[in-house]
Image (tube, rainbow, N blue to C red):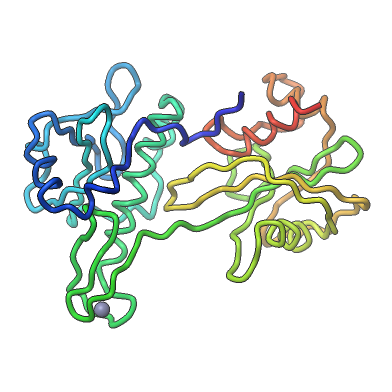
Length: 291
Ligand SMILES: [Zn+2]
């Protein structure tokens, strides 16, 4: 079975606690409550390469507690420290951590990271512009004290897809990728589009391909800052490429043996595959195993 990255968290998100002030107060004073240890917004790992947790007493002064959920009935929190620098840049440390974290641990971290990042960037009310807003629903929202509007953490849908033609798939690279790395093509879903329509549009815009029979494969969160990656495969009858060089540095068709070589770390492979925590990795593996 394929397990996409950033999935499988043991957290029970305990929605019923978010609106229940008394129950939330009990969770915050529960001696078994745990606080996610962070270095800035990056995770702190224990010596087993898993997330490290401390007591709520470790929260920075003036930090607010966000209820991530329950694990075996124990409340698990993350601290929202407004003094934290914004997480716009991804550090080297986060990618080193992701090489170590199992998917279910990365999943818990992703929820915390996306939520903290959202709060840091959404202190002003998008409706009235007031800067006087407060955390709400145990951290899963903000409420504007000026106009009473509730705001909820956003998730940005992204499609990522393999175009397929006669046993080959299309791979491409963006200029910012590490040397040799190729991946599946991807793009944000726009307002008013279905997943299938976004896949069709992106493959047309980026590669000049007309595709049919878009099939959904699987999904995973991607907490940079808060995407939901939806992996698909689509068929084309005409493999002629017209590459949009503002998006892609290169793209080419590769057969099964070529993808297998890349995933087997073959020195002669035509490309370096995406890392296991990226959904493109899962998508390629799904494609290899499907045959
Ligand atoms: Zn407002």
